[in-house]
Length: 238
Length: 131
Image (cartoon, rainbow over all chains, first blue to last red; front, side, top):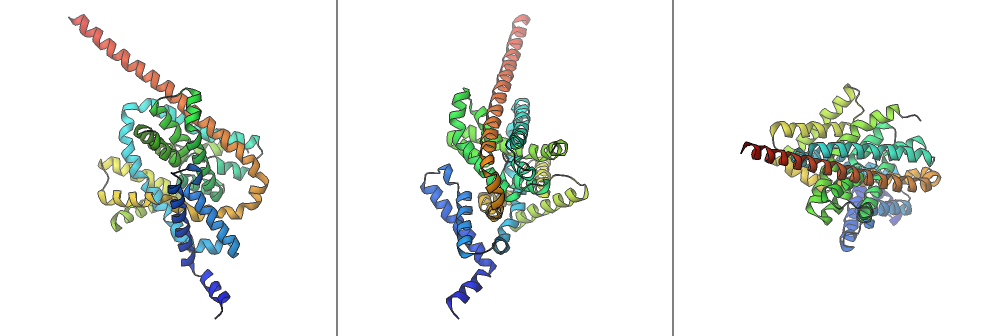
């Protein structure tokens, strides 16, 4: 048996791509930690880039890769359901500020969707790409599920969501300074509504209150968007 | 651990069945998440076995996006044609969303605090009148 044949049989083994995915993610996480949590080196994006390079070099088509990595993809469903636990924990915080939080969340969440659709149209994006952009401010599992169900491109959404989170984490401090918004609650809410989990991680670097409100806003915006987005798209002219 | 995992899968399946049967636009796992959150509110707490599995899964959430995210390699033509236009859409929409949320919350909190202060003042005044 020569090396080529051995390599070919290995490429056909589904577990190989599971292992490659795990190793790429571990490497990406290590880079992220070594860089002092630099948002530009977000482990998900780095892992995706590493795997695309490996697949291109080894000339492996995406469906072959996916049949191996499907096991991880299947866990995304239960993990999305698991978001109920932090959502429940955060709900305890809502009671005291119910009205301000609900109003800001509704205004911010709808702004996120409508601004993406309007700008998408303005810059000439096709309808499936616009639909992929619409949920870009909510947490990745919800955004992917929505894009998939409503006629968007889920893989594009996954990447857009993470890039949105990264940019949000980078611009939050200068933007808030420019807008003269100094409150921790306001900043946390803005991070959670616009930049989901990556923003929440940034929020916890700023202060515990900022992070907690960001986490709350991220969870509630996920709920809000999944209810409001199908309605908006149903009436949106395209 | 198995118990918590089974609860999560059960809620996902209920969510998916409900989404299909009732023709809801909500994705099954998202509906499952909402139902589980209601369940926790109803029972006023999270089962520790469930909390443990949830924490474990959420800790590796990022890894779970990777297989789908690699699908970007199939979108070469879309990225070639529209990639440049995507950048301003993403940046502008993000900045607008963030600014609008922060400013709305600032205005709402100011209103909220004013109201609380007035309520306290009214109460104090009432007490003074009683005396």
